[in-house]
Image (cartoon, rainbow over all chains, first blue to last red; front, top):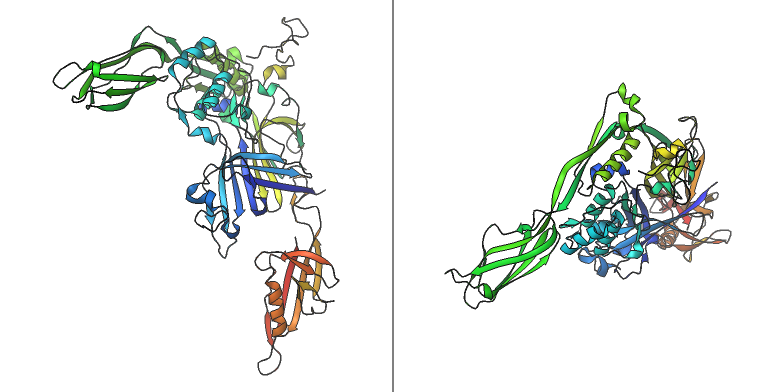
Length: 502
Length: 121
């Protein structure tokens, strides 16, 4: 039976919150929704900003930044189309359209009239997390201590970072945090890259979904509804080609995780300049002081100033400091009418947060796993996780090591389903069933990790990447499940016993 | 009755030189099982019209070209079929006529043969 497909594309050309439908000019649209498996992101220290390409018929120069007669010239001239909000939605057999991409446009690429085709413009778009990828930030010094005192979880830190980035709470959905991260700060760092690190340090995921929602999913996310129920069954009726493959870059019998514990030391010198600072008469100068370690507290800012002739003119100089986690902005005002000031010494003292990657936790199949026999004949494969500053405690490193060992010690199958009829309701993270007796003797369940979609040429298709769900959560595979407060009981003999999630 | 396009009355079409093809705006893919999946952008069947003129005069040719001018820029126009049914149409992908020119008799008298294709929107 035929199905009726539809696709709409919308842009907010003038950033006023009101979107204009451009569907009548839509030639084609394609995009990807994907996230790296949690265990990959821990080592890669990065996530994925999803992408989308929209090709529009450029009727009468509508989208041309160089054509002053174009209908949108005022909004697209001089590169103004950069970061214009946009979204794409699709439908199957009905009037309900589902978002399949939400993001922002990059600069359009225009193709003029030619014998090869009609004039078109192509917008390469990125999901909304693009907006916080290039935005860098330094947290205020006092908040490092406040977050430590309050025992912030990874979810609370991510929320704080998103708030600082200007993301409205209505666009954020966060799972509960699983771990306390003692120390968190940003020192001229990208919001998104730092959040990716935080999520990776707790085996979670952070991404922006097809609805434009910023999502943090903790390590246990797939143990909750709707991820326990298969959302769709795929058979040979539902794809053109199925490939199943093992990946040995996901196969290890020993995991080591480095962690960076920190502690607040006693009051010490946090910063002083390498050389005296010269300030001409009646002049204000701004300098930045970068600390070697984050500051837990600031004790004092001390300085002296003298003229070139050696006279003490400290009373003519004021230094105003704004303290960030690992740097200070110093505004030095020499209000002396005639004398240049040499500011020296200039010192900031306080309690530094010292520490670094000096320890690690390891887990291996022989002592902590169930599949050591597999490696006995095939050779050992070791994986080392390092460089994530948000892995800070021994217990956290141990959790990550065990979590990864449980996933890595058994060869895992990954699937690609090519040429599927598009379904706008499918999302990465959906549990699906794959049933193909030419490949498997019984059906398998798998989690979608990526969807590459295409709409155009009167068709809507998807290529789906999925990860086999078996043994992802060993206690589920073993039958006892994971402990749910209010449902399960402690005790090895109790019928309601269950395993504690890491 | 004579067909019209955009209000322009077209010359008489060649005998058996007119077809109306019913089609769906769709793509068809064959799945791994052999099943066919059809994606349609409209559930309504559409029509494709093929109009062939044979040995028309230059005056009649100009009339056809005038009618063609209603749709040759991608615009839509009303087409009234020889049966008197109205459709909103655009020029089909390969719809622009290629005129074959024939000398009918000695001298400067030429006659033209060509086909135009229209597609219902």
